[in-house]
Image 1 (spheres, helix red, strand yellow):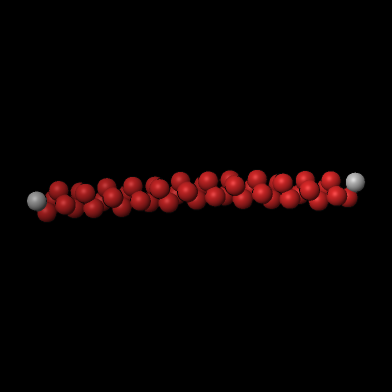
Image 2: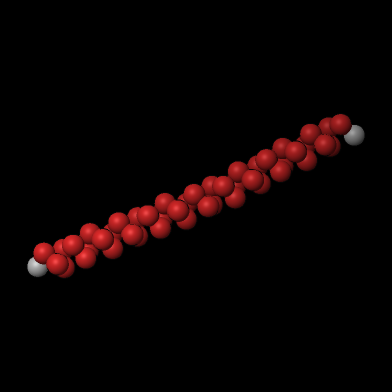
Length: 47
């Protein structure tokens, strides 16, 4: 019984870690788009 409980806890920890990493990648990708759009706005403003 203890073994199955430990297995469930480990799987939950791994799943949580993967979810956090996945969200971090999406956030970094969105931040890159925001910076790119800001740079384009500055370039267009100087023309």
